[in-house]
Amino acid sequence: MTNLEDIRQRLIYEVEHSGMSKIEICKQVGISPSAMSQYKSGRAMPALDTFADICKCIKIDANEILGITENKIR
Image: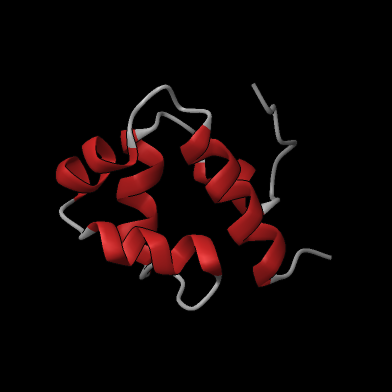
């Protein structure tokens, strides 16, 4: 069973291994670097639309992050 911490960890892993800087991702998605820091620390989780935009930006299937399909970690 997947929980929010698993989702957060997979999302942060994929962000960090996307080949893009966090600043670049923040600019493309339209969020502040402090918001990304809050996601990383677990103080906050992105809204669903922001989550989807981050996944699109880093070219990862949201279903993998959510644990619905097999995670093909790069």
